[in-house]
Image (cartoon, rainbow, N blue to C red; front, side, top):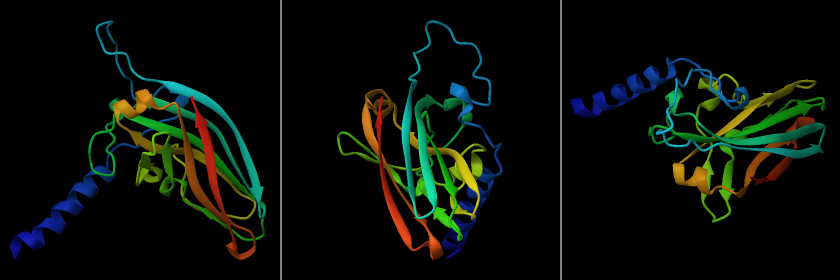
Length: 190
């Protein structure tokens, strides 16, 4: 019985400790906010890919834009994925949502997913909007406001190497009383 009582407490302590870690910046034009130090030629080549995306759509008074995607090494940031494994590579998608409707819009792109060309689905990094400073902050977008930032998807090394094309899928609810739901499917080609 004591073990069953202690397990939730241990889980809460681990979660609290991870929440108290230093916030990081992932977008920073190809570099992380922490110094990676010097590298020698014997060090394995890091994977890095970038692409400009020119996606924009206006529905029910809100405009959603996706302007870039980037795969980069973030091993120096000590991030963990949804299974608490260390993250070496991420796919960063830069998104902005502007709301001109009289009511708030709402969106949770980090709860969206990436579908790779081979059919693999990759879910967004849970809690990235809390622990990463330049992550897109999920939730409401007030009337007249614009939110922007990075949606973060953890990648395994082989996924980062092989990623050539895929799709970013997510929803936005907008319009008067948020009655309009728009499902987005944004193509990504490196």
